[in-house]
Image (cartoon, rainbow, N blue to C red; front, top):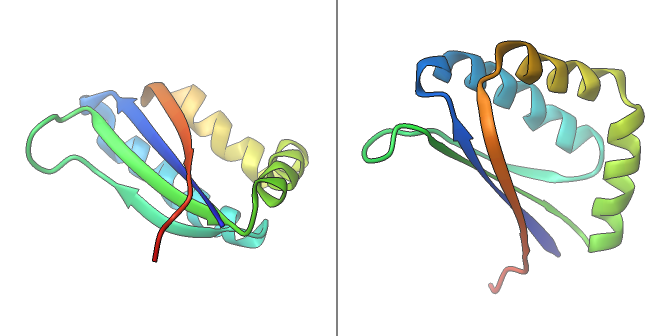
Length: 100
């Protein structure tokens, strides 16, 4: 299993827009073969950092997801929402393997 860790720097004045964006991705990841573990929004501390975690059975499965995502209309609409609202300033992506 491989887990993707996304750390977003978001516009703190556009939390609602980012939350709308996040809610779109949770079912999309599931539909395209992954397990979404949720988005984590700022509560205390930094007001401009959000996180997301989602897993795939393997790095190859994640790479298949990326190919499907690039061709999927709903995924492209989610990206367009973020671009239109400019709720995301930047993001970092890392891959981790869980230990149970």
